[in-house]
Length: 86
Image 1 (tube, helix red, strand yellow):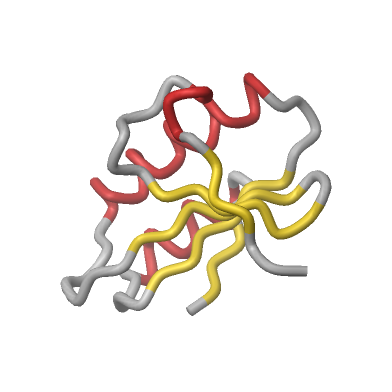
Image 2: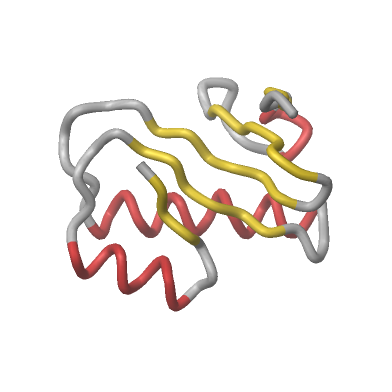
């Protein structure tokens, strides 16, 4: 199954946000950049994930990024059930 890109505006998110659907109840936020993801980014990601979960209750939200992620941010996101893949 290929990843289907979804319109972020349907979730109340900015138009530049990339959301891919990889399963029936599994969405992925995609961040493609080289600079490190820090805690401030983690809080923004959590806000976006909560908006997605508000529109699709029971949906699993993950993060896919090419950037390195701060260890505190990894712990913070995992505590909020957001998996990180690279």
